[in-house]
Length: 266
Image (cartoon, rainbow, N blue to C red; front, side):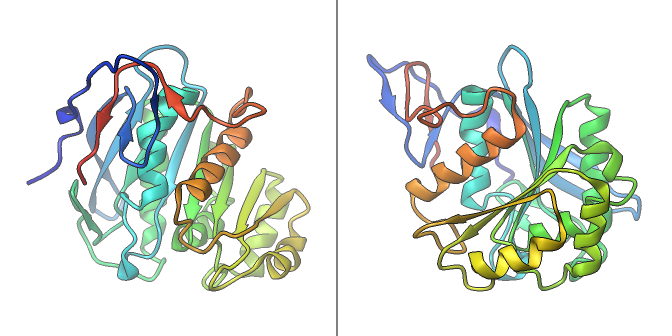
């Protein structure tokens, strides 16, 4: 059965409640389908603010599906739960080809980042056609490879403002792709866990040195999967700081919410 995001049951606590991993804040959420130029239908979810201006749009590219990555990977799930309400940010999540989640399974099969070019292009095209403003790619692990390989070339380059990378392994993406980003001049923020399994901060600073506008941020204590509320919150703060005018504030995004809340069960 496909999960319906409209099934969340919201209630009004008597006082401000702490925002926890499973806390869902109000937003307009809908299941979506994205159609690629090579004939695949991808499944996903779009979460936008209930009201007011959309300050930015995140087009999220998930970790490696052959190692458990999908649109519900926890940082992206928390982004969709929180950022529409806390920062006015729209969050577009989807399963790349052949990937499954509670939302369903996208058509096709994993293609080692090659056929996934069509997935990236289709997701960006969807955001453009929906009129979603200030569009940014956010890649995590395998998703950073897709952002680096396809985000600085057309048809994507002219449709996005820049990218935020979480735990880039730089396995598939090469110096050729980094030089394309350098030539584009588009902002590139690279969040690198201190204890990453593939690329650690010092090595990342060296590799991304060919991109003058890249901002490489080493995150103390973090690991590749950003496990723990402390590290997930840090990622969301960094993203909001990069993609919105007002940022997350001096103290970061609020850790409590005084309004309707729901609790995710999966």
